[in-house]
Image (cartoon, rainbow, N blue to C red; front, side, top):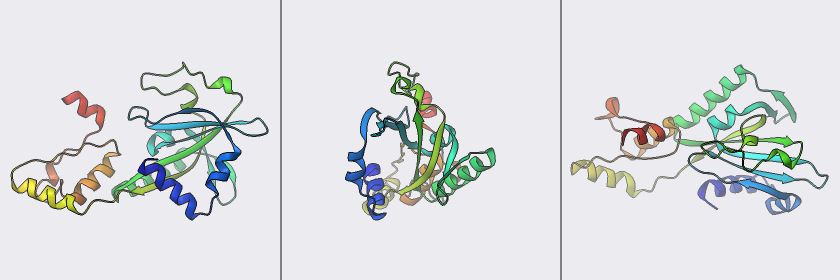
Length: 206
């Protein structure tokens, strides 16, 4: 899998979750893959007793937005996700992003039947109707992308030669700015005027 998938699987392995055994318990009924427009991926699984669940993960701010409940890990109870609780989660996302962590939200919901999937019911970004609301938030994961040792030096040499280095990323703007600082794209000389924008805004300007 990709680095994000591998990081999540390694975390489950560290938590002693039997990954293959867990996967084999469930029948995969439908899957919608991740794209830069969708900012999420989801998998519909069917349990042995016939219940259908959607498990979704993606950009944390989007997953939070489509959730109206959350799983209280310690008690195992599902609680209502109030505006105050959403604000606290938002603050946690921002805190992780400021430390150059990519944040991934994870949530789930039960479907009454597989008829809710409606493969043709997608919007302009390719998001299915069943992916838009009614989820229970499980948590937010912070993933650290390791910067290769040679990158900051390469950027320093480019700057010295008069070459302006730009970074294009699909990450949260706060995460992107923090990583740009780590590698030297944003520094003490340009920090005040450094421009950080999201993909759609960037595309409108080119």
